[in-house]
Image 1 (cartoon, one colour):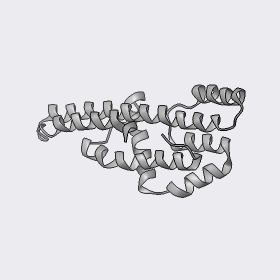
Image 2 (cartoon, rainbow, N blue to C red):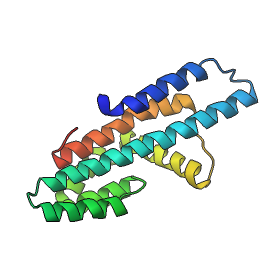
Image 3 (tube, one colour):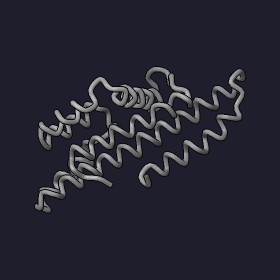
Length: 161
C-alpha cells in the first residue's frame, strides 16, 4: 500500500541496522531504543495525519462546502494523538453507529492491544512519562495489527485512500 510506504521504508532501513547490533552490548541496546523511539513518532504522526484526512473526506460527502470546511477546521484543531478514545469520540460525533461499529470490530482484540501499546510508547517518548518498553521486534509484530485499526476506520466511514 502506497500510504504506508514511508513507514515501511523506515522499518526496512532500521531493520538492516538492528539486525547487525549485538544484543549483549548495552550501547547497541540503547541505539535500538533510539531507533524504536523515532519509528514510533513517525508511525503515530503518519496515522494521525491519515486519520484526520479520512474524517475530512467523510465530511466532504455531505455536499455542503461550508459545513465541510467547518468540520475540517475543527478536526485540524482538535484531532491530536489518535488514541482509541479520540477516534471513538470523533466517530461518535459523526454518528453513534460509527463508533459502535468500530468498537464492535476491535474491542479487546489483538489490534486494540497493539494500538494501545503504540500510543503508550509514543506517550513515553514524547512526554517522557514512563519508559519505552518496546523492542524493535515487538514493534514489527504490533505494526501490522495497528494498520487494521486504520482499515476499520476507513470501512466504518465508507472512505478509503
